[in-house]
Length: 105
Image (cartoon, rainbow, N blue to C red):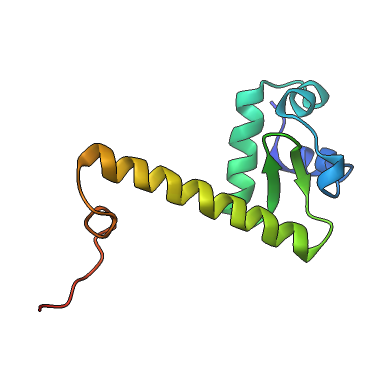
């Protein structure tokens, strides 16, 4: 199976949002499954390497700080949406869901 360094090497050819590569394409380039690509991307992100991804554009390395900020905002919005859904499913407030402290009134 390909490793994180090999994925980074392939992604070095995909700088900038307009040059994104789908998981399918990366998997074919590396000879692994799309699931393995996502695992390697996740492992690299956990190491602090900022790999961007967008459903319509694929995976890429940000060419500018603006691209990095745009992707950060995209991730934040997606995470907040997921948390709102979870709070609704559990029938609790967002504050209760995330364990936010409340001041006595």
